[in-house]
Image (cartoon, rainbow, N blue to C red; front, side, top):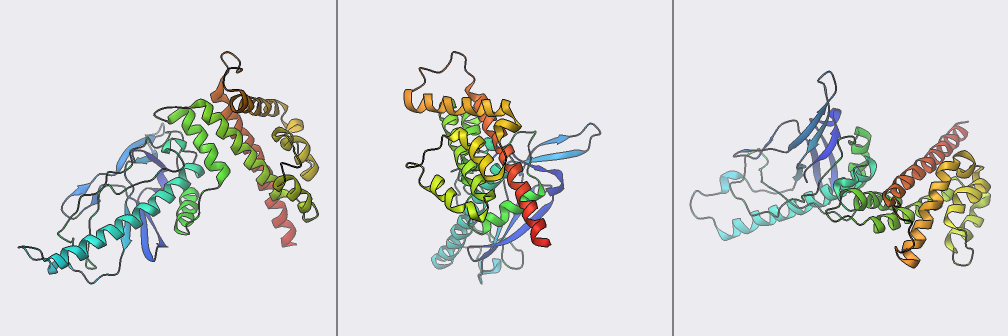
Length: 331
Protein backbone atom coordinates (compact mmCIF):
# COMPACT_ATOMS: atom_id res chain seq x y z
CA UNK A 1 0.00 0.00 0.00
CA UNK A 2 1.11 3.60 -0.41
CA UNK A 3 -0.62 5.93 2.03
CA UNK A 4 -2.55 4.73 5.04
CA UNK A 5 -3.05 7.84 7.19
CA UNK A 6 -3.12 7.65 10.99
CA UNK A 7 -3.31 10.25 13.72
CA UNK A 8 0.07 11.09 15.20
CA UNK A 9 -0.80 9.59 18.59
CA UNK A 10 -0.67 6.15 16.94
CA UNK A 11 2.81 6.61 15.47
CA UNK A 12 5.36 4.54 17.36
CA UNK A 13 2.79 2.09 18.68
CA UNK A 14 2.35 -1.64 18.31
CA UNK A 15 -0.71 -3.72 19.17
CA UNK A 16 -0.81 -7.49 19.60
CA UNK A 17 -3.69 -9.90 19.03
CA UNK A 18 -4.12 -13.66 18.74
CA UNK A 19 -4.81 -14.62 15.13
CA UNK A 20 -4.76 -18.04 13.45
CA UNK A 21 -3.21 -19.51 16.60
CA UNK A 22 -0.29 -17.06 16.63
CA UNK A 23 0.53 -13.86 18.47
CA UNK A 24 0.57 -11.10 15.84
CA UNK A 25 1.67 -7.51 16.31
CA UNK A 26 0.59 -4.71 13.99
CA UNK A 27 3.26 -2.05 14.20
CA UNK A 28 3.07 1.64 13.31
CA UNK A 29 6.76 2.56 13.68
CA UNK A 30 8.17 6.06 13.67
CA UNK A 31 11.33 5.07 11.77
CA UNK A 32 12.49 2.49 9.20
CA UNK A 33 12.07 -1.16 10.20
CA UNK A 34 15.08 -3.30 11.08
CA UNK A 35 15.26 -6.15 8.53
CA UNK A 36 18.40 -7.71 10.00
CA UNK A 37 20.82 -6.73 7.26
CA UNK A 38 19.26 -3.38 6.35
CA UNK A 39 16.50 -0.96 7.28
CA UNK A 40 13.23 -0.88 5.34
CA UNK A 41 11.36 2.42 4.96
CA UNK A 42 7.65 2.20 5.68
CA UNK A 43 6.67 5.86 6.11
CA UNK A 44 5.03 8.04 3.48
CA UNK A 45 3.82 11.62 3.82
CA UNK A 46 2.87 13.68 6.84
CA UNK A 47 0.78 16.70 7.81
CA UNK A 48 1.87 19.42 10.26
CA UNK A 49 -0.30 22.08 11.82
CA UNK A 50 0.46 25.81 11.60
CA UNK A 51 2.81 25.58 14.57
CA UNK A 52 4.86 22.86 12.92
CA UNK A 53 3.49 20.09 15.13
CA UNK A 54 2.93 16.80 13.31
CA UNK A 55 -0.70 15.71 13.41
CA UNK A 56 -0.92 12.89 10.83
CA UNK A 57 1.45 10.41 9.21
CA UNK A 58 1.04 8.10 6.23
CA UNK A 59 2.39 4.57 5.86
CA UNK A 60 3.40 2.97 2.59
CA UNK A 61 3.83 -0.44 4.20
CA UNK A 62 2.26 -2.01 7.28
CA UNK A 63 4.68 -4.09 9.40
CA UNK A 64 3.10 -7.18 10.94
CA UNK A 65 5.10 -9.45 13.24
CA UNK A 66 3.99 -13.09 13.57
CA UNK A 67 5.30 -15.33 16.35
CA UNK A 68 5.40 -18.93 15.14
CA UNK A 69 6.55 -21.75 17.45
CA UNK A 70 9.76 -23.24 16.04
CA UNK A 71 13.08 -24.64 17.21
CA UNK A 72 15.00 -23.14 14.28
CA UNK A 73 17.89 -20.88 15.27
CA UNK A 74 20.26 -18.82 13.17
CA UNK A 75 23.30 -20.81 14.24
CA UNK A 76 21.84 -23.97 12.65
CA UNK A 77 22.45 -22.54 9.18
CA UNK A 78 25.84 -23.52 7.72
CA UNK A 79 28.00 -21.11 5.78
CA UNK A 80 28.26 -23.65 2.96
CA UNK A 81 25.53 -25.61 1.18
CA UNK A 82 22.18 -25.62 2.95
CA UNK A 83 20.56 -29.03 3.62
CA UNK A 84 17.28 -29.53 1.75
CA UNK A 85 15.39 -30.44 4.94
CA UNK A 86 16.45 -27.22 6.66
CA UNK A 87 15.60 -25.15 3.62
CA UNK A 88 12.13 -26.74 3.36
CA UNK A 89 11.38 -26.09 7.04
CA UNK A 90 12.47 -22.48 6.70
CA UNK A 91 10.44 -21.93 3.53
CA UNK A 92 7.36 -23.34 5.26
CA UNK A 93 7.82 -20.86 8.11
CA UNK A 94 8.11 -18.01 5.63
CA UNK A 95 4.97 -19.02 3.81
CA UNK A 96 2.99 -19.56 6.99
CA UNK A 97 4.06 -16.25 8.51
CA UNK A 98 3.53 -14.30 5.29
CA UNK A 99 0.03 -15.73 4.84
CA UNK A 100 -1.01 -14.99 8.41
CA UNK A 101 0.42 -11.45 8.22
CA UNK A 102 -1.30 -10.79 4.89
CA UNK A 103 -4.67 -12.04 6.13
CA UNK A 104 -4.54 -9.95 9.30
CA UNK A 105 -3.27 -6.84 7.49
CA UNK A 106 -5.97 -7.18 4.84
CA UNK A 107 -8.80 -7.43 7.37
CA UNK A 108 -7.32 -4.61 9.46
CA UNK A 109 -7.07 -2.28 6.46
CA UNK A 110 -10.55 -3.23 5.24
CA UNK A 111 -11.91 -2.15 8.60
CA UNK A 112 -9.88 1.06 8.67
CA UNK A 113 -11.14 2.16 5.25
CA UNK A 114 -14.66 2.02 6.70
CA UNK A 115 -13.98 3.35 10.19
CA UNK A 116 -11.70 6.25 9.19
CA UNK A 117 -13.40 7.14 5.91
CA UNK A 118 -10.38 6.36 3.74
CA UNK A 119 -12.31 4.85 0.84
CA UNK A 120 -9.40 5.56 -1.50
CA UNK A 121 -7.68 2.59 0.08
CA UNK A 122 -9.35 0.60 -2.69
CA UNK A 123 -12.42 -1.63 -3.10
CA UNK A 124 -13.79 -3.61 -0.16
CA UNK A 125 -12.27 -6.81 -1.55
CA UNK A 126 -8.74 -5.36 -1.49
CA UNK A 127 -6.09 -7.94 -0.59
CA UNK A 128 -2.69 -6.96 0.74
CA UNK A 129 0.13 -9.32 -0.10
CA UNK A 130 3.59 -9.73 1.34
CA UNK A 131 6.04 -7.06 0.18
CA UNK A 132 9.12 -8.06 2.19
CA UNK A 133 9.56 -10.76 4.84
CA UNK A 134 12.38 -11.87 7.10
CA UNK A 135 12.67 -14.46 9.85
CA UNK A 136 14.22 -13.98 13.29
CA UNK A 137 14.80 -16.74 15.79
CA UNK A 138 13.73 -16.54 19.42
CA UNK A 139 16.99 -14.78 20.35
CA UNK A 140 16.39 -12.02 17.82
CA UNK A 141 19.00 -13.24 15.32
CA UNK A 142 18.02 -13.07 11.66
CA UNK A 143 17.64 -16.41 9.88
CA UNK A 144 20.13 -16.10 6.97
CA UNK A 145 17.77 -17.25 4.26
CA UNK A 146 15.25 -15.35 2.16
CA UNK A 147 12.62 -16.06 -0.45
CA UNK A 148 11.08 -14.04 -3.26
CA UNK A 149 7.91 -12.35 -2.05
CA UNK A 150 4.85 -11.15 -3.89
CA UNK A 151 4.66 -7.37 -4.34
CA UNK A 152 2.52 -5.46 -1.88
CA UNK A 153 -0.82 -3.98 -2.92
CA UNK A 154 -0.23 -0.61 -4.49
CA UNK A 155 -3.49 1.26 -4.06
CA UNK A 156 -3.59 5.01 -3.37
CA UNK A 157 -4.29 4.97 0.34
CA UNK A 158 -5.90 7.81 2.15
CA UNK A 159 -6.99 11.41 1.88
CA UNK A 160 -4.80 13.81 3.84
CA UNK A 161 -7.90 15.18 5.57
CA UNK A 162 -8.78 11.77 6.97
CA UNK A 163 -6.76 9.58 9.29
CA UNK A 164 -7.34 6.54 11.46
CA UNK A 165 -7.88 7.40 15.11
CA UNK A 166 -6.70 5.26 18.03
CA UNK A 167 -10.31 4.10 18.44
CA UNK A 168 -10.42 3.14 14.75
CA UNK A 169 -7.15 1.25 15.18
CA UNK A 170 -8.32 -0.68 18.24
CA UNK A 171 -11.68 -1.59 16.69
CA UNK A 172 -10.17 -2.62 13.35
CA UNK A 173 -7.42 -4.76 14.86
CA UNK A 174 -9.75 -6.59 17.27
CA UNK A 175 -12.34 -7.19 14.54
CA UNK A 176 -9.65 -8.41 12.14
CA UNK A 177 -8.23 -10.79 14.73
CA UNK A 178 -11.70 -12.21 15.38
CA UNK A 179 -12.24 -12.75 11.65
CA UNK A 180 -15.18 -10.35 11.41
CA UNK A 181 -16.06 -8.55 8.20
CA UNK A 182 -16.74 -4.78 8.14
CA UNK A 183 -20.46 -3.86 8.27
CA UNK A 184 -22.05 -4.33 4.86
CA UNK A 185 -23.70 -0.93 4.58
CA UNK A 186 -20.50 0.97 5.40
CA UNK A 187 -18.43 -1.25 3.08
CA UNK A 188 -20.84 -0.61 0.20
CA UNK A 189 -20.74 3.13 0.82
CA UNK A 190 -16.94 3.11 0.88
CA UNK A 191 -16.99 1.22 -2.43
CA UNK A 192 -19.33 3.85 -3.87
CA UNK A 193 -16.98 6.65 -2.87
CA UNK A 194 -13.98 4.77 -4.21
CA UNK A 195 -15.63 4.15 -7.59
CA UNK A 196 -16.66 7.79 -8.01
CA UNK A 197 -13.47 9.47 -6.81
CA UNK A 198 -10.38 7.28 -6.44
CA UNK A 199 -10.61 4.31 -8.78
CA UNK A 200 -8.09 4.09 -11.61
CA UNK A 201 -11.11 3.65 -13.91
CA UNK A 202 -13.98 5.48 -12.17
CA UNK A 203 -17.51 4.16 -12.65
CA UNK A 204 -19.87 6.84 -11.37
CA UNK A 205 -23.04 5.01 -12.35
CA UNK A 206 -22.01 1.88 -10.46
CA UNK A 207 -21.01 4.13 -7.54
CA UNK A 208 -24.53 5.61 -7.45
CA UNK A 209 -26.09 2.14 -7.53
CA UNK A 210 -23.92 1.06 -4.60
CA UNK A 211 -24.66 4.27 -2.67
CA UNK A 212 -28.39 3.66 -3.00
CA UNK A 213 -28.06 -0.01 -1.98
CA UNK A 214 -25.93 1.07 0.99
CA UNK A 215 -28.68 3.46 2.10
CA UNK A 216 -31.32 0.74 1.85
CA UNK A 217 -29.22 -1.65 3.93
CA UNK A 218 -28.39 1.05 6.49
CA UNK A 219 -31.94 2.28 7.02
CA UNK A 220 -33.14 -1.33 7.48
CA UNK A 221 -30.40 -1.86 10.07
CA UNK A 222 -31.34 1.38 11.84
CA UNK A 223 -35.04 0.52 11.93
CA UNK A 224 -34.28 -2.92 13.35
CA UNK A 225 -31.86 -1.45 15.91
CA UNK A 226 -34.19 1.17 17.36
CA UNK A 227 -37.44 -0.83 17.23
CA UNK A 228 -39.17 -1.69 20.50
CA UNK A 229 -39.68 -5.38 21.36
CA UNK A 230 -43.40 -5.01 20.57
CA UNK A 231 -42.54 -3.79 17.06
CA UNK A 232 -40.17 -6.59 16.07
CA UNK A 233 -42.90 -8.66 14.44
CA UNK A 234 -43.94 -5.78 12.22
CA UNK A 235 -40.32 -5.04 11.33
CA UNK A 236 -39.71 -8.66 10.36
CA UNK A 237 -42.68 -8.53 7.98
CA UNK A 238 -41.52 -5.31 6.36
CA UNK A 239 -37.81 -6.09 6.17
CA UNK A 240 -37.77 -9.85 5.55
CA UNK A 241 -40.85 -10.00 3.31
CA UNK A 242 -40.23 -6.85 1.31
CA UNK A 243 -41.52 -8.43 -1.92
CA UNK A 244 -44.96 -8.96 -0.39
CA UNK A 245 -44.95 -5.73 1.66
CA UNK A 246 -43.34 -3.08 -0.53
CA UNK A 247 -42.25 0.11 1.19
CA UNK A 248 -40.31 2.47 -1.12
CA UNK A 249 -36.78 3.00 0.10
CA UNK A 250 -37.09 6.73 0.62
CA UNK A 251 -40.30 6.26 2.62
CA UNK A 252 -38.33 4.25 5.16
CA UNK A 253 -36.48 7.46 6.05
CA UNK A 254 -39.78 9.25 6.72
CA UNK A 255 -42.99 7.38 7.51
CA UNK A 256 -41.45 4.11 8.70
CA UNK A 257 -38.82 5.76 10.91
CA UNK A 258 -41.51 8.07 12.25
CA UNK A 259 -43.76 5.13 13.11
CA UNK A 260 -40.96 3.18 14.80
CA UNK A 261 -39.12 5.88 16.76
CA UNK A 262 -40.84 9.20 16.02
CA UNK A 263 -37.95 10.44 13.87
CA UNK A 264 -38.41 11.60 10.30
CA UNK A 265 -35.75 12.82 7.90
CA UNK A 266 -38.38 14.72 5.93
CA UNK A 267 -39.44 16.60 9.05
CA UNK A 268 -35.97 17.11 10.53
CA UNK A 269 -34.01 17.89 7.36
CA UNK A 270 -36.26 18.35 4.35
CA UNK A 271 -33.37 19.39 2.10
CA UNK A 272 -31.50 16.14 2.78
CA UNK A 273 -34.70 14.15 2.36
CA UNK A 274 -35.15 15.70 -1.09
CA UNK A 275 -31.57 14.74 -1.96
CA UNK A 276 -32.23 11.16 -0.81
CA UNK A 277 -35.30 11.10 -3.09
CA UNK A 278 -33.09 12.21 -5.99
CA UNK A 279 -30.52 9.53 -5.15
CA UNK A 280 -33.11 6.75 -5.40
CA UNK A 281 -34.61 8.34 -8.51
CA UNK A 282 -31.16 8.31 -10.15
CA UNK A 283 -30.68 4.70 -9.02
CA UNK A 284 -33.96 3.70 -10.66
CA UNK A 285 -33.10 5.48 -13.89
CA UNK A 286 -29.73 3.74 -14.08
CA UNK A 287 -31.03 0.31 -13.05
CA UNK A 288 -34.26 0.20 -15.05
CA UNK A 289 -33.77 2.51 -18.01
CA UNK A 290 -30.04 3.01 -18.26
CA UNK A 291 -28.39 6.40 -18.21
CA UNK A 292 -30.42 7.90 -21.10
CA UNK A 293 -33.02 9.58 -18.88
CA UNK A 294 -30.56 11.23 -16.51
CA UNK A 295 -30.81 14.99 -16.51
CA UNK A 296 -28.13 16.78 -18.57
CA UNK A 297 -25.26 17.73 -16.31
CA UNK A 298 -26.70 15.76 -13.38
CA UNK A 299 -23.98 15.48 -10.74
CA UNK A 300 -23.93 11.79 -9.97
CA UNK A 301 -20.98 12.16 -7.61
CA UNK A 302 -23.16 14.37 -5.38
CA UNK A 303 -25.43 11.38 -4.78
CA UNK A 304 -22.62 9.61 -2.92
CA UNK A 305 -22.30 12.63 -0.60
CA UNK A 306 -26.07 12.41 -0.09
CA UNK A 307 -25.68 8.80 1.05
CA UNK A 308 -22.91 9.80 3.46
CA UNK A 309 -25.11 12.51 4.98
CA UNK A 310 -28.03 10.07 5.28
CA UNK A 311 -25.72 7.62 7.09
CA UNK A 312 -24.72 10.39 9.51
CA UNK A 313 -28.39 11.07 10.33
CA UNK A 314 -29.14 7.39 10.87
CA UNK A 315 -26.02 6.89 12.99
CA UNK A 316 -27.04 9.81 15.23
CA UNK A 317 -30.37 8.07 15.87
CA UNK A 318 -28.72 4.72 16.58
CA UNK A 319 -26.25 6.38 18.97
CA UNK A 320 -29.00 8.27 20.78
CA UNK A 321 -31.04 5.07 21.10
CA UNK A 322 -28.05 3.22 22.53
CA UNK A 323 -27.42 5.96 25.09
CA UNK A 324 -31.08 5.94 26.12
CA UNK A 325 -31.07 2.15 26.51
CA UNK A 326 -27.87 2.30 28.58
CA UNK A 327 -29.36 4.93 30.87
CA UNK A 328 -32.54 2.90 31.37
CA UNK A 329 -30.58 -0.27 32.12
CA UNK A 330 -28.49 1.61 34.69
CA UNK A 331 -31.54 2.58 36.70
